[in-house]
Amino acid sequence: MIVEIKIPSPGESITEVEIANWFVTSGDIVEKDQEIAELESDKATLTLIAEDGGKINILVDAGETILVGAVACTIDNSFAGKEIAPAIKKKEEKKDIIEATKKEPVLTAKKVDSQTEHIKVTPVAKKLMEENNINVEDIIAGLKRLGKKEVLKVIESADTPQIELKNKPGSRDVERQKITTLRRKLSERLVKVKNETAMLTTFNEVDMLNAMLLRKKHQNKFVEKYGVKLGYMSLFTKAATIALKAFPAVNSMIDGDEVIKHEYADIAIAVQAPKGLMVPVIRNAETLSLAEIELRVKELAEKARNNKISIDEMTGGTFTITNGGTFGSLMSTPIINPPQSGILGMHNIVERPVAVNGQVVIRPMMYVALSYDHRIIDGVSSVGFLKLVKELVENPFKMLLEGNMEEMLLGI
Image 1: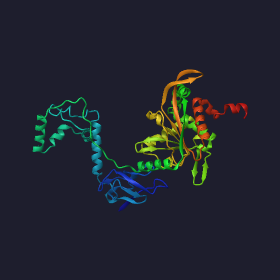
Image 2: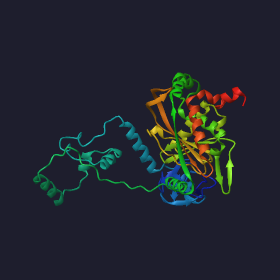
Image 3: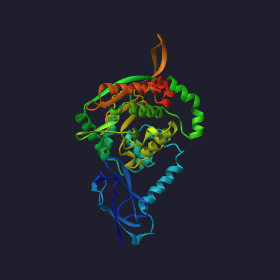
Image 4: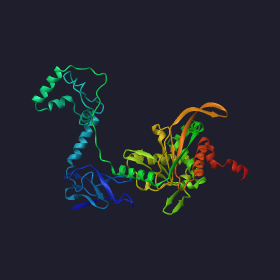
């Protein structure tokens, strides 16, 4: 019986995907529930699963685009239970060899013998040799014959005076790769944001001393109780939810001729994944504690980096936070994540001299940036939002009372 394997739907708004890679070839024997292909949409990466075991017949080549619901391959289940696909066996055998020799040093041109130690190997060739577990002697042994061209080349090089260079010659190799569907869609969205929004960025700086002391003092107990480290992302996320409540325009978005104001804070956290930037969403972050935020951030980040995150987990979001400081960024102007109207950018913590109570002291400082759509967010709201985030992070205990200690004391 022939079983048709159709492209599953990654999400409501996605109508087509790209076959990024086939893990098998036509004629291979596959098992039920085996991963047979990797699919890329404009939002996420997912895998194609064999619904039955048998001999596979691939209908769409890797790199081609196919509609959701279309047949990507067929499986003849009359071959179910037969010998596993040769390609898979070869891959498993190669994996065993690699594991067995993982601790063995890889032979290079300088470690083979005296006759091959002077042979130059390009970076691309070296990488290819390492991937296939072969050395220079294997390459030389594989040559079928030496021709006139090769002999003359050696004679000419012997007659030519050799000039010793202090620096090794640089590589001129190039590599071409097709832009993935995810990267192409991301590029289109970024250009669209620049062209269709009145984006501005306002800056401030945060004294991170109190946050760092709090983290250092209670880190061990925090890890012991919750199994996750206390980071700065949870502090900024919590501060942002409070500031969004105080300045609701920053938590709004334009929908046609209407402005949608959200009574909740679904915070999207930008994560750098192998396939590109992803922004999983923490739902109702305003109701979560610091520990709950840290646990959710860790869970979503791991899923994104392992390409296991779902479309639903990246859909929505009313506000985004991105942390360029993890890569060493001192300052940047983050770009809005549409259809949202604001994004908070965190940066690297750097010790520098600042004035405190009329004295110059060294403090751990972080620049923060808020990019916003000036069509619906005025300057007073954007500056006020960022100033409140600064105050809450500099004095974390204010988060318990949502920054209104004086108002509560005075009853105003």
